Length: 379
Image (cartoon, rainbow, N blue to C red; front, side):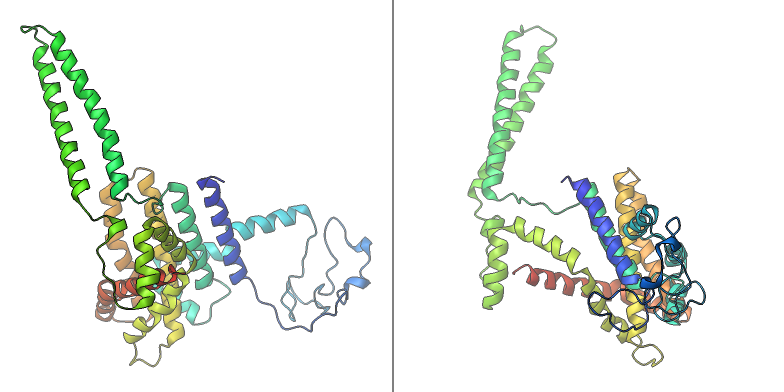
């Protein structure tokens, strides 16, 4: 399958996972015995199934008499369809996860992240997509886009031998160019006006060949290279045998595993970040670990979506200065607004915590996450 096909499949899978996590929960119900039909399904005649619609006097899931649009016992919708159109709608909704909650959540995540965080913590759950669902979808989307635009880790690392082989091939081409320049110069008369240009081409070809010879000599004399890293070891057998040795032997494979693990274990950024956010509020008993978890998860979801947007914009030819300025200024501004309104802080308190997050916490968390990924790559 092509990279683009893999990208579409990954994005769809991400939507399905997010939809599963964020789906409506039902109430408790007694388990049905094996082979037993729904309490009311056996009493519904097939004539009551008209144009794909079920009779809606009783819940078809638990048998409770219906009051309103949903069963008050198990939560299932009262109005059900049994048509191919309804099935296709479920596929579209499950793959893309676009519904009313999405359009209420995304604008607030972008422009009013603090108010979104506070409202979700305070109990407005049905109106918005949950933080973990949005985070999962954004991570799947990010890596799907990376596959589509070719932003992936290299699978082949140029070692000393590969560089030498590449230089030898380029040197052969340079030698051919030198021979051609010499031949052209010999064919020209001494007073030919084109002789000056031919002499310049010959000089350029000679200079290029000399440069390649020097580079080839440097590569030959150099005993380094990723395959010959001069690392004696840490003295810890697990690290020396399972991490350092594997990186020296096959750096391309380890980079691939690093990328794959960052995709599969991106959720670990949440528990890693929570203690550092807690340290900035530990004397304020009003805010608990749950509040910090919501803050961190919504923030990570936004940063992932921002990274996706900037990557696509860069691929489409957006000005590099604009991409750079957006990457520099948008994250701290978003953190400031989310902190100020999510934790109801003063301007000074929000600025101080934004500084700590962007200049200390982010780098510490990423360093811990990177080391965890490297350790996981040993298996």
